[in-house]
Length: 283
Image (cartoon, rainbow, N blue to C red; front, side, top):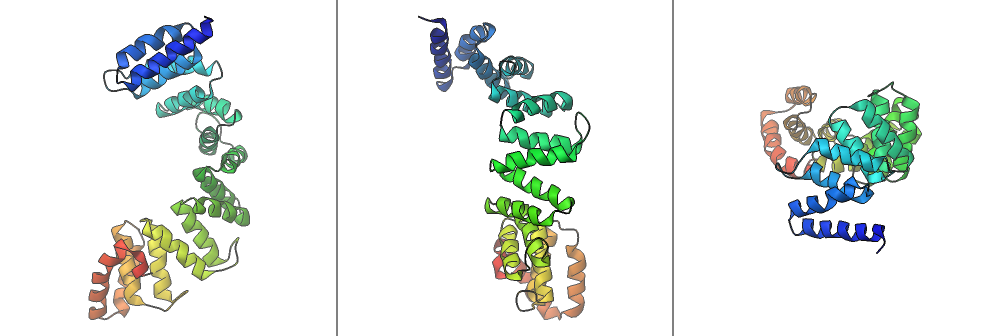
């Protein structure tokens, strides 16, 4: 039997042993294969050693096997090695392997490399290259990359493109992207002004517990934007935002107390309990 076929069968034996909970047998099968240069055994051994329990975990050996497989162009090993190095804050080495995996088309590596380049970890910062890698990952449909691309573009003044990427991330459920798209719709920056659509996006993000969206809903209620003005609902939402840790909520609560009766304040405080569960009641 050809040697590669034998190695594949033995590697499968290791997987079967692992599925049966026999880590020792899996290690015994994969280690000699890995030592002989079998790339799949090297990668599997790295995964097992990196993700094992306290008795079997060995990050130093996991790194050794991930690197051996990565040097044989195993994409998942390259990404796993980069992740392991990043976890150790070995940024220069992590940056190298994220770059290798990103150039091979791994979307998550492209996103991670964008973050590293934006922050200048393990080397000089490069905003243009960060944006280019964010875009590569965003075009693969990676939600977090879509949001980061939108944020980087917005910071550079490209508000229309930023709104497009915030919308793409929002459609995949990214709450901060929903909030930022709502801001664009409320202000008419990068989008035609649409207060009703902004309110709906704030509501979606608020329902997921995103404090800035809860606070902005409170402001909309206090100002009567895209709906009837209601200090009572505004105060209830501001109380929820404060409970969620929003820094500006206490100032809004204080301002509303100055223009509301004690009965209305009491009603709003009672309503806040319901609004925290369902912001739509107040928003």
